[in-house]
Length: 190
Image 1 (spheres, rainbow, N blue to C red):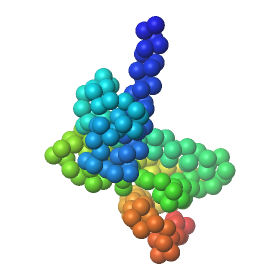
Image 2: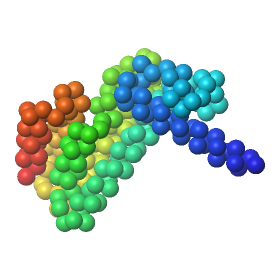
Image 3: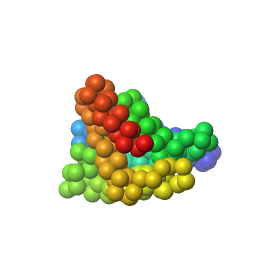
Image 4: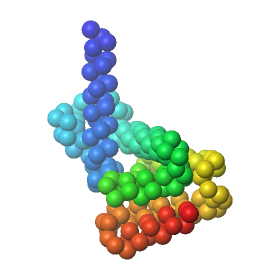
């Protein structure tokens, strides 16, 4: 019986994380209340504290989980490119640019909330660590055989350009000039 309760509790915790992730991406951490998150899954606000000690703890976990998923996705994309005998670095950048048209990048989506360190210190720490992990993933893929000959400095510039293109996609949509920026970035990769 207790294992059933444990699995139900874990399932509810995941529902809260999923609802919070969706709302935080759409509206921002500061704009989403605990009651809004709980209403999204049909539970009361009081039930929230069975799973998380505070909204800050929830936000930090959402941020950590989102970046971990992105890092896994990046590694999988590099693997797919390698298996297809394609340049894994170019494949990863291309996937990111394609993805940013359909969805949101955690670095871009959470940047405003991460900058508000006075209210969300744990969130900001998760954000910094997550962003650095993605950069490290890109740097690692760039050093692999078959990834071309980008220097560390070039990879840093490419990372910044990727994020800039992701921001532009989020704020302006897939306008022609944004697509030109993406194409220019890909052209720089060779």
